[in-house]
Image (cartoon, rainbow, N blue to C red; front, side, top):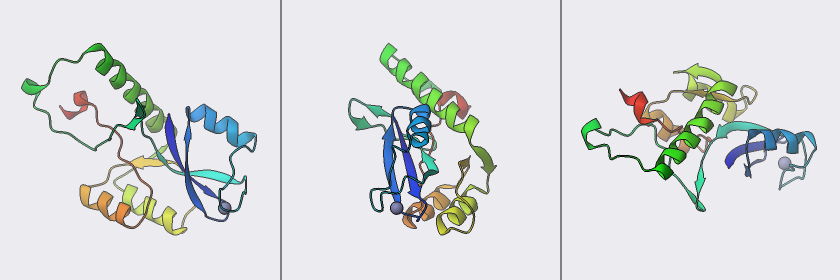
Length: 151
Ligand SMILES: [Zn+2]
């Protein structure tokens, strides 16, 4: 399941769960997604907020977790499956969006403020930048960092 942050043409913001990115594309193409406030079917993704559901609960995704290699527990099969699913979600986000790198914070804020059109981006933000964006109500979610990327 993927949570998308959406906005209608009038700028109402809402969120909706989709089975996957293709389900979102199909449902918007058929006009099935409507703004809950004004019922406009003219909706678009704002900043993609990937999240993964496991047994009805959200798995928190954090920018980086320092796990010393020596203390990394062996993964059981379920963890390995969850990991590869996370990786698939993440690869999809990274392959579809525009990488704006360190400009992420500026770009996300400008989209939120309506200074530039909404589009799908990803990039890097410092913890301080991410916190400031969230406090200002900008819809962002960190992507999971996979352990092999920490080396
Ligand atoms: Zn609306």
